Length: 149
Image 1: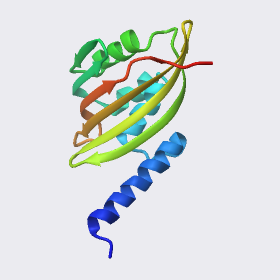
Image 2 (image 1 turned 30 degrees about the vertical axis):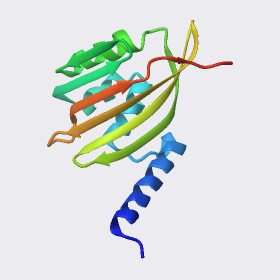
Image 3 (image 1 turned 180 degrees about the vertical axis):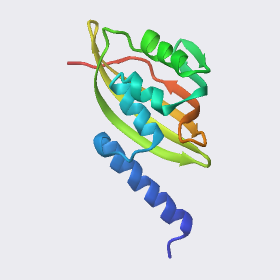
Image 4 (image 1 turned 180 degrees about the horizontal axis):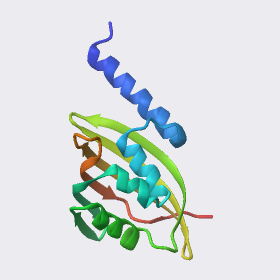
């Protein structure tokens, strides 16, 4: 006899694995939409996803970041994390899940720039506002990890 907890865990694992194997078909969660917009450097879509007053914090290998509005988030992401010379070639993997009242999304980006090829993975936790935008977000980043070949 399978318990409810076992059944719920199996359903979550199936969803995570399905999303991980095919980012293009990942369910339209706020987190997966954020990852897709980030991959496309799509500020218009990111503006739609982020609340005007967002509680944003992030940790990269060498720095802690904070922002309280979408423009500050864009400055962090596209002024510091991903430069103009960074071509985000693909969204390699997306995993989403729920942690009580928060969404978790993990995503991996394939990046190419004059220095070579890299993978960047980020894990994010987020909460939605009443109007369905991201109002609270925390991100931890792996940094640029070199890829051979």
